[in-house]
Length: 115
Image (cartoon, rainbow, N blue to C red):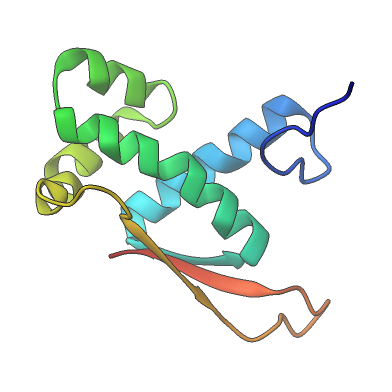
């Protein structure tokens, strides 16, 4: 029996989906909020929150696990600037705010930001 897979495909192959999530996560860490489509924002939440949870532990092994997805400079910003404010928070590090549809194609837009 076929089972449903987790996550959205976005009409891309696996490597392209991973590159998309890596770049969205890097932009979110660098700018602290980004504007994207609602579906990508929801998928990004599933991608970034485990990385923040790993970064809260803060040891070398967890840092290397985060570096697999984000670059060194972005990882340093995540560990140095963002994670210390979430030490006492058990989860829910991001907030998705729905915006007006995009003018050109009517796609549902959203803004994802750190709480």
